Image (cartoon, rainbow, N blue to C red; front, top):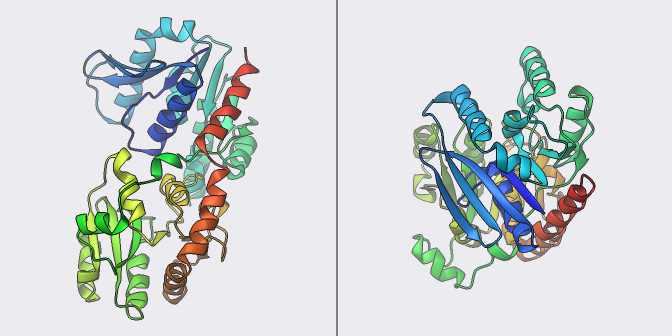
Length: 369
């Protein structure tokens, strides 16, 4: 079987690229030949392993969202022979738009998120739903990663996707090095208890609430530290808030790390916190999934889709981000119960192992052949 993935990537950054990369690895390990297509400034081919190649396709240098879509369409036209020869064409998210009208009865799309779910304005929500209903047409198989997205697209896009979750690469999140050695490399002491946030420093992530909650927690525990592994336009404002609260010496900012290095950041943490509840599109945070696979207690907003994998009092807590005392208590309790909560996170993570997810996707592929 030959599968073409859009987008293709061997060095992923965001959620769509991670999904494509992890799926490609599993498919290739199971004897399926995978070709990933990616727009580029020059033509090139990268052979990741004997069954997985990434084709970089030279396109125009158009900028912006519309420019990116045009370039993706250019790529599809240039690689139409590969698409015709493939047994399955699988696009992730909005990349499907470039193959919507490509003549094939073997098109698959993973609707990784429904952007209408993040809109609060009724008008903008309606426009997003209309746009989505126009984009996702003529596929042979639709996949949604959870029931939240499935229900949204079923009702408003008039399609009925199967639910296949996003996977977790549990083995690749393990480390051989000692935790204390890694902590020292990042500038932390052995006794430091690290509260980790990994994501974007943008509105909707409830980062100001996180800092204010951490302030409350830090007054009850001297050795906890808050680590942001992220970048974004709120960085200076967050630093200023930390200064005003006089906890700037307990809050650390680190630039995002490459995908294969993320395991070290997760493994020095004692609890993972993701309080965002309004900047999502119905998908579970990929960072939360990685925290799950690392065996960390996790704290999330009770109004977010992350509650699908975080069970209150079992492997973490679901909280109201605006209740600082509640969040602070959840942080401290999670650290105190790290071993038990972390073990429970790993038990949940095993259900989302990428090998299990890939096998389910392959079974769906075969129904189209």
